Length: 358
Image (cartoon, rainbow, N blue to C red; front, side):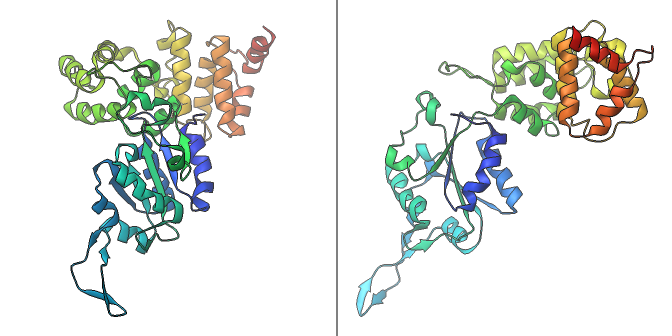
């Protein structure tokens, strides 16, 4: 069963505490590498990354030393360990081996000793070094040109199949992509990534390609007012594919109609939402949640504006907002909104009773 990244990050420390190797399996571009770096950052460790797909036996085991060595008077060969192995043995690091299922069989078999005994060719891994690998295999393996991992190989790893949720990426991306990109992906989640079968030679969006697109398009100014929509479309087509590019171009062309959290909560511009449907309001509530706006105490003015907006919501969206407010673990905001009234004198508590009674 696949888990999202929030679940994986909650479980992984227990595996790491047991000094066991972790194998992350999942589709390309979902953030497997990113989550490894998150673990390293949380632990205060540097990352030593190697692409197993590019390694030879020499890259894994090292090369013979040409100096003469003798043991009890007999000539013997010694090996110079590769730099990454020396580092992982002499200091705590997160040793990240990517694309293991694209490595040669010789390299993969050489990793048996690493995953079994935390050593390679006589070099012992530092006790506090964390070993993590990533592959595109698992249930999605048939869509990739990768080697199958047999039971004996998998048995040496602690295997996690990851299927990150949309919320995983939206939380991560909130301060890493332009607001236009974030709003588009939040409101058009089918374009976040392709989850079906892949047609050969066709470009599809992924979580990774959205970040790469953003980092190229944002400096070009295409998300600014009167930005170059043709340039945006051409860039989006290259990074995300035709279908996502068409939808994104139309979205950006009409982005002036978008409403921000600041517009509602601080400016009280409720009229902008007058013609919204359920999906629009639901997306707005998701903005509140993603920005963690309810973690801190809201001002009296913000509570007033929130009350004005709350009573305009369809019942199911109003309850969704109430749930998000409660999940923020700040009871002060819950109490304040419950006690509040709109500018027209409608009590929020009475409105809640009407929703629940209806």
